[in-house]
Length: 289
Image 1 (cartoon, rainbow, N blue to C red):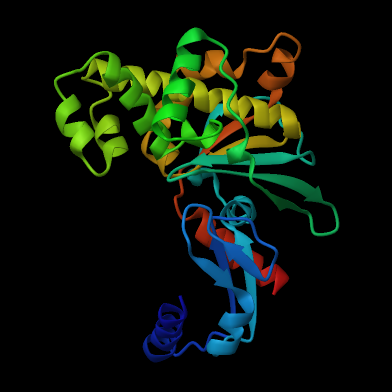
Image 2 (image 1 turned 120 degrees about the vertical axis):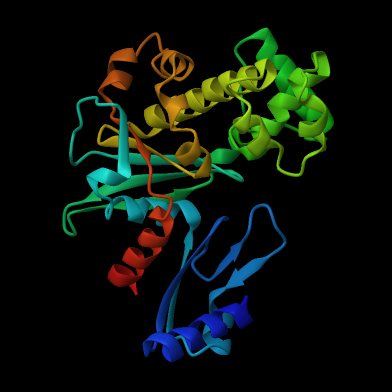
């Protein structure tokens, strides 16, 4: 990590005559403010090592979805797609969830002194998946067996890997004309997304994925009582915005015996700006470093 940081700092000085002495790094993993161990990698980001080995004088480490949370404060109307208008309460909790390579979440608490929503990092993407139907149980058992896991978590279903897992389960029962080359591909999720409107298996995969995404989002919205808004980020959302307006998603999201009325009050908003985490890291550095 040190060589590319040095290279970036040198480029900034040479190309733009900007000397950078403060920086914020947002990484996918839990942070203790000095070290981040990446969740799906052996890499480790160490704040003290960066300070020792580069010209930087101040460094802030954030969880990646903590940065997304800060970034929400910077977004404009054009960056957002409202999928449930709800009845927003401006100074209550917000929450953000997003599927991509993994599944990230963050809770945003309103700070009256700063007049901002400040993110609290969490690792809610690794909470245990609870199936409610026979087919869902079969999918969970399939993933557990094939991935050699002790338990199935939401990230195993609501992520790029999750799309792949669901498709593999369905194709094990019945193949389609695209199955052979999808199963051989490196980026299976991208191909499944590409064929979701013309291939029955890909369509079914995305229907199940939408349901699981909605359930995970619903649970998080209730856990946090995010009456100021539930924001959906990540690469999958940016490329597949239609799933959040689908009947499959809406039916599952509002399904709750006791609190359907609360869920309907919560604004649900898709973030279209894929640079939200970059904006958030910059914003966090401005107010915290």
